[in-house]
Amino acid sequence: MALMNYLTQCTFDYGALEQTPKVLQRLGVTRPFIVTDPGLKANGLLAALLAALGAEPAGMFTETPPNPTESASAKAADAYRAAGANGIVAFGGGSSMDLAKAMGLMVSHEGPFERLGGSVKGMKHIGAIPPLLAIPTTAGTGSEVSPGAVVILDNGRKETFVSPFLVPKAAICDPELTLGLPPQLTAATGMDAMTHCIEAVLTPVVHPPAEAIGVDGAERIGTWIERAVKDGSDRDARWHMMMGSFEGALAFSKGLGAVHGLSHALGRIHDLKLHHGTLNAVILPHSLAMIGNNAADKFARLRRALGLAPNADLAQYIADLNARIGLPTGLAAMGVKEEHGEGAIDYAVSDLATLTNAVPFEGDQYRELFRRAL
Figure 1 (cartoon, rainbow, N blue to C red):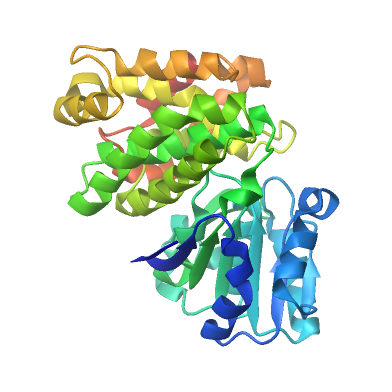
Figure 2: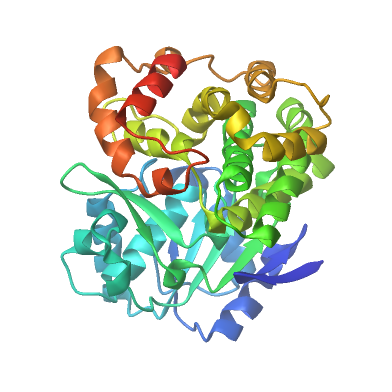
């Protein structure tokens, strides 16, 4: 069982969930508050966490929506305060982990909440939140080691909150929790992690260790994702996909790019309820095609990691992989329409991920990206 210290300490392997009490004890958490979603309450995974915990938590919030909102976070914060909790356990996918981080901000910082957002340079206002243990149940978002959280504000904006204080104090990654995930969710979350790895490698920010981790993560996901999608009980595939997800988040400490800029913008459209990982998967090949020779050396490194020929079309490889694992071929197949474009582009241009894209992206570039991906 590996114990890694990179951004945060992570206990990683089958059976790692049993270490929950020890990790909480190390963090000084005696009254944990669990944040999760209705699906994990219904499918029995929450019961597995409670069994591993060995004692009743101080409280729980089980109503995390698919895209975390300010209002849901505020409701969780009220429950946290009422429970007299002194620490947080985020249990689930990226939504539960992001909501837990937002809740942590709300119980430890003065409002209004939106003043802490990245678009208004709110990082300078962010300090410590209650100790946070993150336990992912999907292999995709990497929020268990990420310094960020994405939340839809009451004003409709999908805001990114970023601070070293939002990196969970500890993570437990147990691939057992991902066994049996449906093929579509496995594919979407897996390509979310692939996008993290590839965009992190391509961003011009200088961070060789993070870049090397991104390359390894991309190789790992490219090798194992089809097996994981085909057989939800493949233990080796699940182990490597969870490691690839973990590595994706370690890598994107150096930044992301336009795929995430547009994905965040489209994800804020409440009526569509679009899945973040699926959006990333669909947009990624078109972003790669637009970047092209502007990142030739990094493209070559990614081709080698993915086992492709030196002259292979990396964008086409991703498009073909998406098709093989059953993901949509374009945004239109997800319900996105041409009229959604301009509003999304305005948000994408100001998204934090845009700042670290491999090449400068402004309105015209995003219009082209949207057109291609639609």
